[in-house]
Length: 140
Image (cartoon, rainbow, N blue to C red; front, side, top):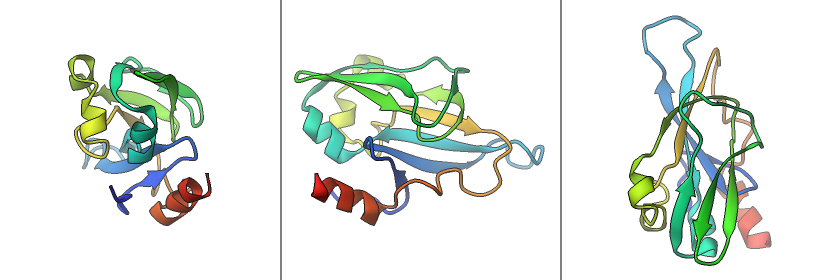
Protein backbone atom coordinates (compact mmCIF):
# COMPACT_ATOMS: atom_id res chain seq x y z
CA UNK A 1 0.00 0.00 0.00
CA UNK A 2 1.32 3.44 -0.87
CA UNK A 3 1.90 6.06 1.82
CA UNK A 4 -0.78 8.73 1.26
CA UNK A 5 0.55 12.24 0.61
CA UNK A 6 -2.43 13.96 2.26
CA UNK A 7 -1.25 13.39 5.84
CA UNK A 8 1.82 13.56 8.07
CA UNK A 9 3.66 10.78 9.91
CA UNK A 10 5.58 10.15 13.12
CA UNK A 11 8.71 8.11 13.64
CA UNK A 12 6.56 5.80 15.82
CA UNK A 13 4.41 4.93 12.75
CA UNK A 14 1.29 7.00 13.44
CA UNK A 15 -0.35 9.14 10.78
CA UNK A 16 -2.12 12.46 11.35
CA UNK A 17 -4.63 14.03 8.97
CA UNK A 18 -6.12 17.48 9.48
CA UNK A 19 -9.90 17.09 9.13
CA UNK A 20 -10.76 20.78 9.11
CA UNK A 21 -11.73 23.43 11.57
CA UNK A 22 -13.76 22.58 14.61
CA UNK A 23 -17.05 24.45 14.64
CA UNK A 24 -16.32 26.27 11.39
CA UNK A 25 -17.62 29.81 11.56
CA UNK A 26 -17.41 29.79 15.35
CA UNK A 27 -14.85 31.55 17.51
CA UNK A 28 -11.47 32.26 15.99
CA UNK A 29 -9.75 29.98 18.51
CA UNK A 30 -12.00 26.97 17.87
CA UNK A 31 -9.03 24.98 16.55
CA UNK A 32 -8.72 22.09 14.15
CA UNK A 33 -9.48 18.39 14.28
CA UNK A 34 -6.65 15.95 13.58
CA UNK A 35 -7.55 12.32 12.83
CA UNK A 36 -4.92 9.79 13.95
CA UNK A 37 -4.20 6.18 13.02
CA UNK A 38 -1.32 3.77 12.55
CA UNK A 39 0.42 3.33 9.23
CA UNK A 40 0.15 0.43 6.84
CA UNK A 41 3.75 -0.44 7.71
CA UNK A 42 2.84 -0.61 11.43
CA UNK A 43 -0.24 -2.78 10.96
CA UNK A 44 1.70 -5.09 8.65
CA UNK A 45 4.53 -5.45 11.20
CA UNK A 46 2.03 -6.12 14.00
CA UNK A 47 0.10 -8.80 12.12
CA UNK A 48 -3.52 -9.64 12.91
CA UNK A 49 -4.85 -6.97 15.30
CA UNK A 50 -7.12 -8.47 17.96
CA UNK A 51 -7.65 -5.65 20.49
CA UNK A 52 -7.40 -1.86 20.63
CA UNK A 53 -7.32 0.29 23.77
CA UNK A 54 -8.13 3.94 23.12
CA UNK A 55 -8.32 7.02 25.37
CA UNK A 56 -11.57 8.51 26.63
CA UNK A 57 -13.20 11.42 24.80
CA UNK A 58 -12.19 14.56 26.66
CA UNK A 59 -8.75 13.27 27.65
CA UNK A 60 -5.89 15.76 27.22
CA UNK A 61 -2.98 14.39 25.17
CA UNK A 62 0.50 15.61 24.38
CA UNK A 63 2.78 14.94 21.42
CA UNK A 64 4.87 11.81 21.89
CA UNK A 65 2.81 10.61 24.86
CA UNK A 66 1.06 7.21 24.78
CA UNK A 67 -2.68 7.44 24.10
CA UNK A 68 -3.54 3.76 23.75
CA UNK A 69 -2.43 0.31 22.70
CA UNK A 70 -2.84 -1.94 19.70
CA UNK A 71 -2.61 -5.66 20.46
CA UNK A 72 -1.94 -8.26 17.79
CA UNK A 73 -1.34 -11.98 17.78
CA UNK A 74 2.40 -11.11 17.86
CA UNK A 75 2.76 -8.22 20.33
CA UNK A 76 1.32 -5.14 22.02
CA UNK A 77 2.37 -1.69 20.80
CA UNK A 78 1.73 1.73 22.26
CA UNK A 79 0.08 4.39 20.13
CA UNK A 80 1.41 7.92 20.59
CA UNK A 81 -0.26 11.30 20.12
CA UNK A 82 1.27 13.19 17.19
CA UNK A 83 -0.14 16.54 18.40
CA UNK A 84 -1.27 18.18 21.64
CA UNK A 85 -4.97 18.62 22.29
CA UNK A 86 -8.12 16.98 23.56
CA UNK A 87 -9.52 13.68 22.31
CA UNK A 88 -12.76 14.66 20.58
CA UNK A 89 -13.72 11.25 19.11
CA UNK A 90 -12.68 7.61 19.19
CA UNK A 91 -13.40 5.02 16.53
CA UNK A 92 -15.94 2.87 18.39
CA UNK A 93 -16.07 0.37 15.50
CA UNK A 94 -12.68 -0.93 16.61
CA UNK A 95 -14.07 -2.28 19.91
CA UNK A 96 -15.92 -5.02 18.00
CA UNK A 97 -13.81 -5.09 14.83
CA UNK A 98 -10.14 -4.27 15.61
CA UNK A 99 -9.15 -6.04 12.39
CA UNK A 100 -10.50 -2.97 10.56
CA UNK A 101 -7.06 -1.45 11.15
CA UNK A 102 -5.45 -4.28 9.14
CA UNK A 103 -8.01 -3.97 6.34
CA UNK A 104 -8.02 -0.17 6.00
CA UNK A 105 -5.35 1.59 8.13
CA UNK A 106 -5.71 4.94 6.31
CA UNK A 107 -9.52 4.92 6.16
CA UNK A 108 -12.03 3.09 8.37
CA UNK A 109 -9.20 1.92 10.68
CA UNK A 110 -8.53 5.38 12.15
CA UNK A 111 -8.12 5.47 15.95
CA UNK A 112 -8.92 8.90 17.44
CA UNK A 113 -9.59 12.50 16.56
CA UNK A 114 -7.79 15.20 18.53
CA UNK A 115 -9.09 18.76 18.83
CA UNK A 116 -6.18 21.19 18.70
CA UNK A 117 -7.51 24.45 20.18
CA UNK A 118 -6.30 27.87 19.15
CA UNK A 119 -4.10 26.52 16.38
CA UNK A 120 -3.25 28.81 13.50
CA UNK A 121 -2.17 26.82 10.49
CA UNK A 122 -1.34 23.11 10.34
CA UNK A 123 -0.62 21.50 13.73
CA UNK A 124 0.95 18.53 11.92
CA UNK A 125 3.46 20.65 10.00
CA UNK A 126 6.46 19.51 12.08
CA UNK A 127 5.76 15.83 11.38
CA UNK A 128 7.25 13.78 8.53
CA UNK A 129 5.78 14.05 5.05
CA UNK A 130 5.11 10.86 3.07
CA UNK A 131 8.51 10.82 1.35
CA UNK A 132 10.40 11.30 4.65
CA UNK A 133 8.31 8.58 6.32
CA UNK A 134 8.98 6.14 3.46
CA UNK A 135 12.71 6.90 3.75
CA UNK A 136 12.52 6.15 7.48
CA UNK A 137 10.79 2.82 6.85
CA UNK A 138 13.23 1.90 4.08
CA UNK A 139 16.18 2.64 6.38
CA UNK A 140 14.92 0.35 9.13
